[in-house]
Amino acid sequence: DHRDLHLSLRRQRQMCIRDRSTLVLKFGGTSVASTKLIESAAKIVKSEYDKNNNIIVVVSAMSGTTNSLIDHVNSIDFNDDSEYDLVVSSGEQITAGLMSLALKKLNVPARSWLGWQIPIITRGQHRNAFIDKIVPDGIVNDFKEKKVAVVAGFQGISSEERITTIGRGGSDNTAVFLAAAVAAERCDIYTDVDGVYTSDPKMTDKVRRLDKISYEEMIEMASQGAKVLQTTSVESAMNHDVNVNVRSTFNPSDEGTQISNDVSNETRAVTGVAYSKDEAKITIIDVEDKPGVAAEIFKELASSSVNVDMIVQNNFIERKMTNITFTVPMTDLKKSLGVLEELKKRIVFSKVLDEQNLSKVSIIGSGMRNQPGIAAKMFDCLSNNNINIEVISTSEIKISVLIDRNKTEAAVNALHSVFNLDKI
Ligand code: ASP
Ligand code: MG
Image (cartoon, rainbow, N blue to C red; front, side, top):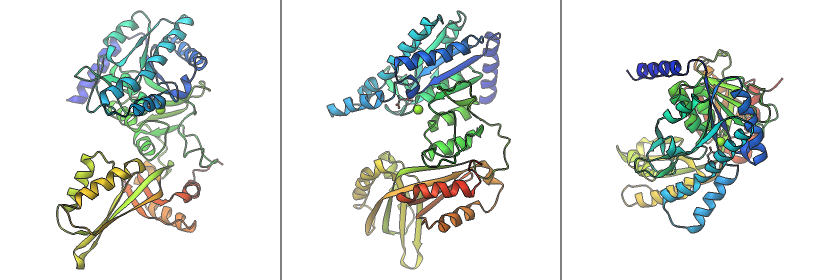
């Protein structure tokens, strides 16, 4: 089956490059923010290269560059996503070339690769394309000459041969996919912090660095607001069994946080507390209570690419009415209200309310699978701190609550303490 194929491919590749292992080293925007920083990142690459490894370097654009490229596109104010991708992908071309130059200066043979040259083939929509396939033959061929491959992150090529980008923060995913394609020993994500923390250090000074975290916990942390890794990249790492380490460019001797399946510390119920401050809540009042209505509403929202998160429905059985509440990112609020305005022509409801100053705070941990009472403990803690819960949602390893945005810091701190995450 698929998995066997994957494993035999992996074995095959390992045989070709038997004497050397392969590492993927990814540097984020703050690690390549100037030529000076690129030259010091190149020294990290050289030190791994000197240990007899095959190396693929993946770079982000210099920090701030992608945003300013997006501003340029927006200032012309004409919508064409394929040209957006051409412009916005260009920041990574610059850093790939500069990194390759910096390596050559250190006497490390290197060449730069743009997504289409490898190629990294994508499918799906521009701006948010998916990596479909990577054909790493050219890169692997260069390994015979001990040449480092420097790859521009975030970009690919569509089947129509247009340049694509793979979503904000996508260079992480470029790195993980390349690691899978060459069966790399590990994928090191170099960034401006030395790993994954129990929560955001900006919110509480009691955070602890985690030495290990599981893929599924990391996926929840990232999707609930932790900005250290792009969520999709962790999903790819889990699907392809890629060992990922998050480590600091400014302190490279530290091993950082290891993300993998192997997490021995199952005694803790909660591993981390995440939050996101850009939540909006929409309530549709007195919706006709009959089959198909919710389907209709959420189908319309989905086809307008609105990202619905939490959903609650309250039925008033005696009145044959229901209220439907859901949350969307702030950026999707206007669009959602537009969709509901249109729907009013087709389905019966009395009105739509929206509320903006909200945050979502989540506790995450695979340990909660085996420990009862975690939700009760969380709600109790919030109530002791006078924090009102508006909406709740859960998964097997996560509980999220929607609260007043002004209480975010208080909630994060209180939960961090009550679940024994504080630094001692
Ligand atoms: N430069 C792109 C962005 O800012 C991709 C990345 O850095 O991962 O979103
Ligand atoms: Mg990033």
